[in-house]
Image (cartoon, rainbow, N blue to C red):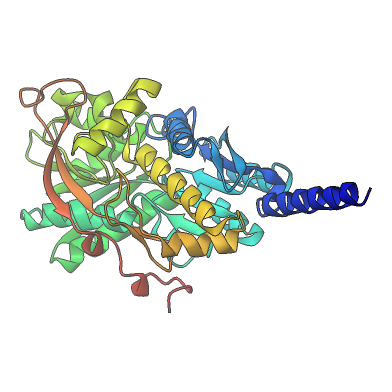
Length: 402
């Protein structure tokens, strides 16, 4: 009888230890919500591709971390800040979500940043570009991963001004992202001795750019800077070609473009465009191998946003594993402590303001004759070192930076 009692006590102790170990992960599931545009103008650059990328990161951990299963859920924010905020609040309050990923559309991202900050949940930003997300509105739990508007200006804006194209006019998406992109590029242009002739703003999801482009054409600017993204950029470039803008001698600058945009435009229309990228599938063996797996699942090559989702989710899971918990304070500390090393970022590092520093790339779209096949779209003009590409955290306005 005594032996049986001792054995029973030992079993209870072991069971208690197991429960205690699993209790380090809330509700015994590490749950990540991918929130983005799944049906509108940003669906191609993010959408289901971002969800696929997040699942690929989870699969590399065997869909399990810190002794708990990993669950990836998805939702469409429809490019509306109120819908994004409502879904984020629902996920955190009743859905057991530990981290939210992607969220293209800076207005939506700023709304989600406020909720994740208050609720102490990790926010892995790949899609939004507003510098305020790792600046004045930074969060201890917010990580801006793939690019930001400062990096776009530091790459494309600098390159064109250095080519002697100093007079600019902006065609800008009229919400937080577009305004931020115009502002950052204006600062860069003026700091290099350039001028801004003017700007015009258009609603998100515009189909007719004719009046905006005519104003830009009439400005006499050397460069028409498109401070928009996704479907808006594609429509603007197509219609600029119809007006013969580049043939007349003005340059067209896509200040934020993606490989999905070039694919939609075709090389005949997109050839010669120069812009800044955070990732290209054909850079080396590592990027080609990962992108081949992604294409097998999605039917297309990844954008930098989709590749960034993979990298951010992988780093988050690596940090959960290292911390042995999904407690956001401990995981956030690990995310800042651990280096970022994967097919997206080489020797990446997370700064105090949540900005992940990695190299960026100035690219130019190939001519149809230069392309060797499907998705062979870019020539990498130069690598922009991380410390040049991104703003010094001390200048970002983030209160987390000492």
